[in-house]
Length: 130
Image (tube, rainbow, N blue to C red; front, side, top):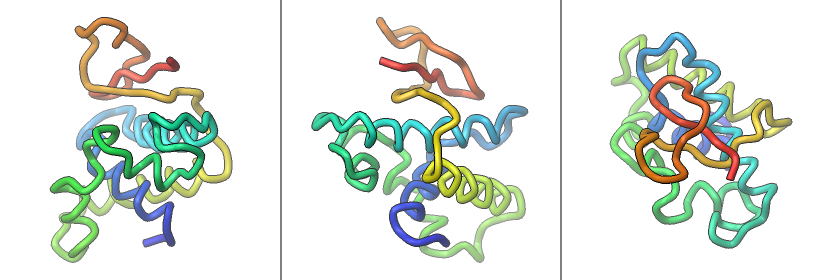
């Protein structure tokens, strides 16, 4: 695992990302870019300018501290090959997003049915810039 904050970003990505999707690498990168874009925006309601605070902000990233996050955090030896590949891709996305962001998204969710929740669909998420 990489050092903090990339570790927490990768684990959160692991908890948020789809398991099977043709655009999986792009989805993982979009998820990690959202975290860094929010830190760059330096909005208090997103956790300010520190990316680790952004990831930990209450009710922002359901993958943070969730079951998948904890599974990968506590015992990677129990992950199957597919999950290991997903985690490696999330680590790569987190490390690359730390250098620069490919996407300008700062928000995503799994639904397009709520008001103001439409956006670009990548796998099971709708990404957007607010």
